[in-house]
Structure formats: structure tokens, C-alpha cells
Length: 251
Image (cartoon, rainbow, N blue to C red; front, side, top):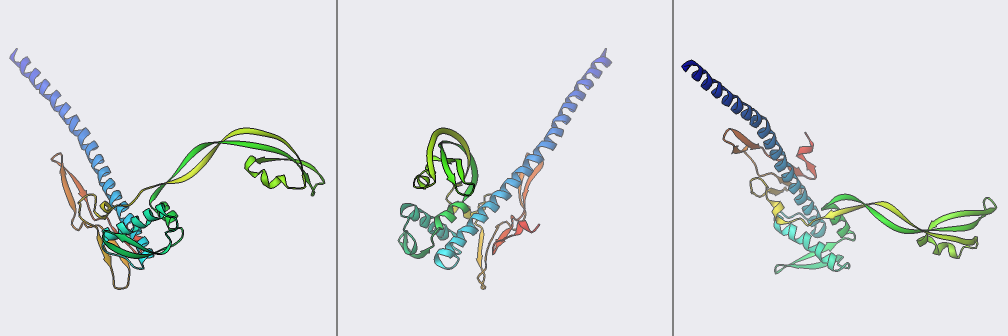
């Protein structure tokens, strides 16, 4: 009887150990995958920030003639110029920009606003339903020496009304069509992008003697965080951009 009780206890203990082993197996598979995803997330976000800051510096140089390693000033100036153009479309060529008791002489090229919106924007496509009207015309076609039937959109009708070859406007037919429209979901870069999203340290902005500009990740030694006691979140240097060349594209 005693042996049966002991065997039952061993059996129950074995079942518990098997359940625990299964749980540990699931954790050992699932948790590292999630940690790798998080590592990729921060690497991509860090590089996205660096790309934005590098583009801000390019715009700053276009406006003022040189880079500025004070990233906060560069971001504020470029954003302020875009805001000024939104308020006044004639804010072009040489202008004086006043920002926090400081003045900046900027040279704003035509098309700056469009370039800004496409640089700092996500390209998207939507499908719009267009209400339109098709007009049926009878036109004399000299090349074939006979009257031909032509279909146009109503907005094009004016250019045909004075055409001596127009014989008759036969019909106007309302119609509905679906059109693919490409647009940019624009955002404004901000000073938060000057900091590594993982460590909170500022990116390294450097202007060399030969005029080349570089922005680099502040991570020097491998960054680690303990997860669930036995796992580690790890991140190495997220790279740099120098004169438009991205280090992560070289791999």
C-alpha cells in the first residue's frame, strides 16, 4: 500500500516536472524571438532618427550655407521655415527668420515646402471614388474624311466648343470611377530625434575640417538589459551616416 502511495507521488511529481519543462521550452523559444524583435525595433528606430536628423542638416545647409552641429537649432530653424511657408507662400529667397530672440538669414528656394513634405512623409496610396461626367461629341475628322464619335470628360469640353470640326454634342453621361491617389502623410521632425531611442543619449554630430558631416549612434560598448532573469536584451552600435552614406547599407 505504501509502495503505491510513493509511486503515485513520484508519478504526480513527474507530471509536474514535465509541465514545468514544457513551459520552460515554450519560454526558451518565445522569449528570445520577442527580444530579437525588440532589438530590431530599436535599431530601426535609431536609424530612422539618424536619417531624419541627417536630412534636417541637409536642409539647414541649403537654407544657411553650412551644417550646424547644434542639432536642436537646426531642427527648429528648418521646421520654422516650413511653418512660415505654410503661413505665407511668398516666404522665398532671402528672408529673415526670428526664432527665440535670435535672427537667421535664410535663403528659401522655390519648392522647399514640397521637398520637405516628401522627405518627412510616408508615401501612401488611397482609392478615391470620383464623380465625373462623360460627354459624347460628333467631330469631323479630316484625316479620315468623315464624322467620328469622341468621348471626353466634361472638364475638357471648353477646348472643343470653339472647334470648327465640332458637329454636335450628343450626350452627357454621369459616371462614377475609382482612382488611385498617391499622397504623403507628412510629419514634423522634432528635437526628440536627436537622441538615441534606446539609451536616451544624444547622437554624435560631427563636422570635419573638409566639410563632411557625420551623425553616429552614441552606443560604444555593447548595451545589455536582463530579461526574465536568464535572458538578455543586447544592442551594439546602430551605425552612422556620413555624407549620405549609411553604414548599415554597406553590410
